[in-house]
Length: 172
Image 1 (cartoon, helix red, strand yellow):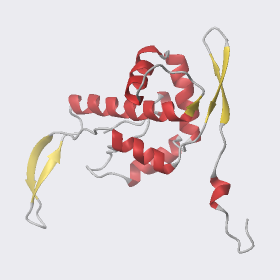
Image 2 (image 1 turned 90 degrees about the horizontal axis):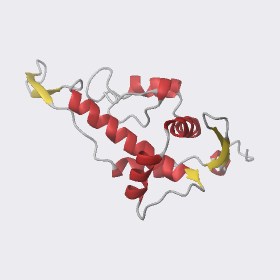
Image 3 (image 1 turned 90 degrees about the vertical axis):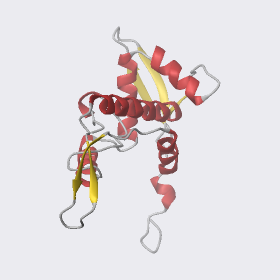
């Protein structure tokens, strides 16, 4: 803390940390991971083509008189497209956060495809858990975000950053 009582921004940076993955056979694999900066997360989010839920109805707002669209966030195609978009965002994040992992491919897109086709679920789940903790995507934080961010109506969260096990945060 500085003399004026403020905390330096540099105090909020974290170096890479060690992640110990344990395979189903008990083999330990040690990797290094880093937290992403806010700017990086925004950049990754912009790479994703986010689906929009289909319009299921039109209603006239009784207060403004405007005709408003009603979105169907329970549409199976929309839900599947959101899961795909969230997985792609998570894959981009993992690719940037995990250090020293040799993933074949010339571009990030090729590397993400390779991850999706070759990374086993046990390793994926453990990496996602570490990624979530490193980047603040804990269940309490996500519940707070779910309550605060409902642009398509109560209970919606159209831009969930992760989907993993019991920490699953749906896309709508």
